[in-house]
Image (cartoon, rainbow, N blue to C red; front, side, top):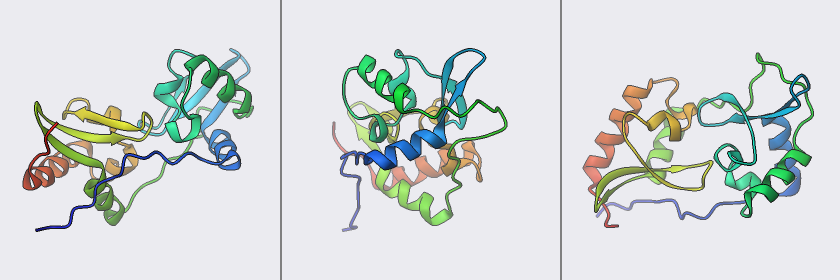
Length: 168
């Protein structure tokens, strides 16, 4: 029997200094509009942040749990006041083959009832059902950018097909 390591689903919260560092790298204030932009670490795009979408942009490990309005107020107060520069990017890691393989072992699974493939969404801090069509919305670009999204889907599907599925 193969020893399979799966993620434990526990989200590790960043400490105060690490939270502020993440926000400094991945938030921008646009003085022309007075709006806050958050770097989407999955899609690698600057996105307008509001109290309605802050949970979809700011990773759970950064923002913590709570009421979206309270989270919005907290993130906005701590966010970077650096001016927006469309040429500047937030965190854009390119993961190696070994890092991608480790992520695939720990952060994707096939569920049987109903049958679906799930990956762990690092922003939402939970498992999300994915298809080839919505993979880019949930699978961090740093893992697939070098090999292409189509190849990434084939890699996920092929590896998970060999493992079988879990109930649930």
